[in-house]
Image (cartoon, rainbow, N blue to C red; front, side, top):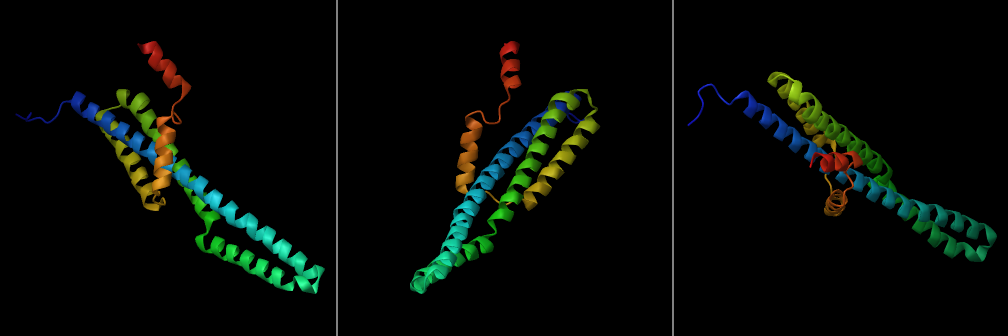
Length: 180
């Protein structure tokens, strides 16, 4: 049997609270995965960039030292060039920066959702709470459109970090302990 007047204010408020919790959790996982992608792209950038630079320097030095070092210098120069081409093609530095920016944007959404749920929503009108939820949902949806989809490794590492308490604040543990 359904209520002809619709759900009660308490039921609507609870629904908004639950949806804000979902939004907070979604942003937490998405942000953590983006930070894992940042680490991966930083590693790729270093693993290709450093050898490319070192090999280019060594090949230049070998070419200048003697004419006998011409062939090894040429091989080293080709390897260095190959590393540079791969680095340029995959654009690891830019991807690293974009993933970090996306991770920070998700953290902003996570924080805003938590504050809306814990601080604002209990004292806001239903309309204001619903508006805050709609705005946060729109921010999250917009961020989802621009963020790089995470790979399986980033997903697993993010899950492991969250499960190990990487997203837990000390105050949360204190609050939980004192409330018991």
